[in-house]
Amino acid sequence: MPFKKVAPTLGEESLETPPVIISQDEKVIKDVSFAVQTMSRYTLWESACLVQAIAATRMLNRRNIETTLYLGIARDTKGIMHAHAWVRSGSLYVTGADAKQNFTVVNKFAGGRKNRGGSFDKISRD
Image (cartoon, rainbow, N blue to C red):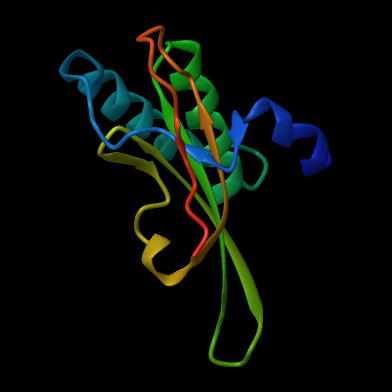
């Protein structure tokens, strides 16, 4: 499926959720992280970072837990462009944390807003 059709289902574009974790959500977040990472080793298709990020986002949002899905790009030493996706929920990184520091964030998607009367933080563009 083309990304332009998937993007609207990921959450509110260019926004992110607060980096605060609600204690009762911590176990669920860790369980989803473990499940996605385990599942990715056994699928018949390639379950790279974007597939893992979308799966984790949907699993957590279905449980009404806030997530931010990040998309980043970087160039390697040969100048070849690479992309990476990762997910944060509260202060925990659910997928893709191992390589995120090497990438520049080009977009964010905030999802799973709980009915707490708050709103997502707008992305700052420097």
